[in-house]
Image (cartoon, rainbow, N blue to C red):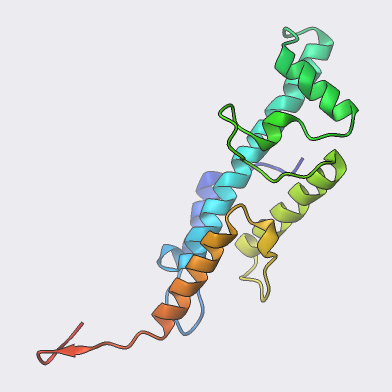
Length: 163
């Protein structure tokens, strides 16, 4: 498992992240930096769920906690190389991660998605993005549109003043 994100460290690194030179802003004044923060928060939720499931499986097998039907379902899924239900869906049935039929591919995607986010956070904005590697690709496109619009914004004169 990748290590957890430290929320304070993430906020500090995002505060320092620059935007495009033409935008002349950094930190949370940059739409894609806000998007990155949201993606990292969601990735951390997935980490928390996966790690808790694995601890519960270990503890139930060791007899330290009661073997519930949910834990048994997770054990069976892992044994069959399937992704445990609770890694993909929340209790209401809403999707919280990506739907991939095999555990190996799902876990590989977890590593690759985390790598994309972590590299962006700790290094610099990448020249290209893996759009399918985001929880909210539409949010990425919206943030990108906002940045481009802001970079091309020209003040309008109204009544002798600028807006």
